[in-house]
Length: 328
Image (tube, rainbow, N blue to C red; front, top):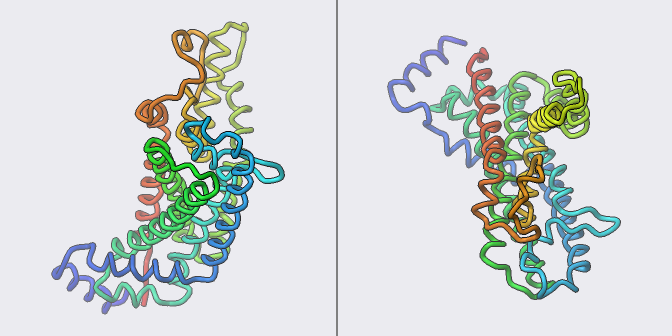
């Protein structure tokens, strides 16, 4: 780092806090995201996907009006050939949006030779990286909220039934979980943006990790569990231990955590997202919806796992960025 940059940094240390300029970075980055061509393409893709899947779902749900107390939630989960349910599309589109927002967030500044100029201003590395991350997270939340409002509006107009308070609350929690699910891939893409100087390499690495957890991780978990917990004598305890280990391994994937959160929030009758033994069902009225509080307790470990993974990945990118040398 040059002498001028070091002197400017010492002066800023005496002047203010490390978060000076944070919201200026957030506002600038959000403006760039919302006006970029890539964001416009993704927005059009998501709107068309949401409109198509919700319209197909409404055609299947018209006969259920007045019979199903959770008709609004069915708009997210009902599929009609040849289109899958909207949540099926969302599981693929949210990671792609998050990666598109962050794969060149740091290395792009290096390639444009603007990083040293930015840090020469009264803006710290802490504020710069956190501002870029918050801008991406806020942009993702804004896009998902717009899609959420679009689906609810189409459901009210198309079905003619207003949503209940619990339906709105469940869909809001689902929206929040989707934001943090995207936050994981946003933070991961930012880590690769710090590690690799070429944006194309960072984008490919992020997509490779996403494909690994989407396609291969569940297969690998099924292969690893019998090795670590083999069934030697065929006892039920051995089979149960192996199955629980496989389930634990699959939950290391953000896709699995998000899928279980989605299942419990959008399907109120779901009483478990893991193994269910017959003795656990004694006294339970099958088919009876759970209250929202019970559904949240059911998926609280998965939800906190999504939040924790987002924070840990951002912390990793923060440490790597702080250790990088930046020259004028």
